Image (tube, rainbow, N blue to C red; front, top):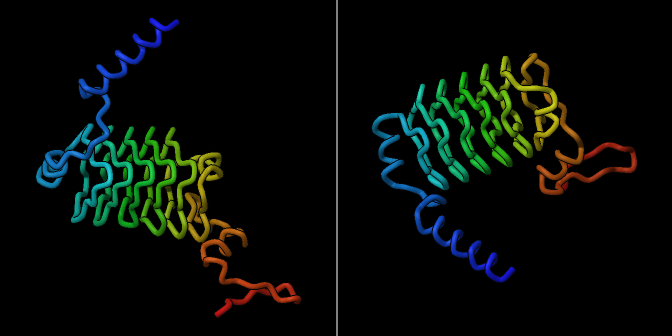
Length: 185
């Protein structure tokens, strides 16, 4: 048993030191994307990407914690790791198929006609987003943190729970005995 533990530890050290596990942001990857608009498999975690990058290619990129500012319409984000990324911009007609977007903030983003087929969107904030015509299942939308105020794929408006609105406003709502709510100063 002791020999097995030593082997596991040695293998883990070799894998990490060989670069097989690479969670570090790469400035070269960022420069490559800024110049070419293509960076499949790049590591752009925790970076701020700005300017317009329509029809870009970020297939299998690591965008965990990244902040996207600008126009990314038509960009291919398929198979990305976008855990806790933030993008409140133009993402119309983008491909998020098989992407991992757990806890991402896509509030107020234009996501019209975007593809979320087989994407993990558990805990995603779609507050006020425009999802009109998007390929996204009802089950996926139920796994999102909120669709409050969002335009849903069928054109209907996402419902807001009073609990979510209360939390969104930081507890600034107070209930009167009449059942009405008002903002507390």
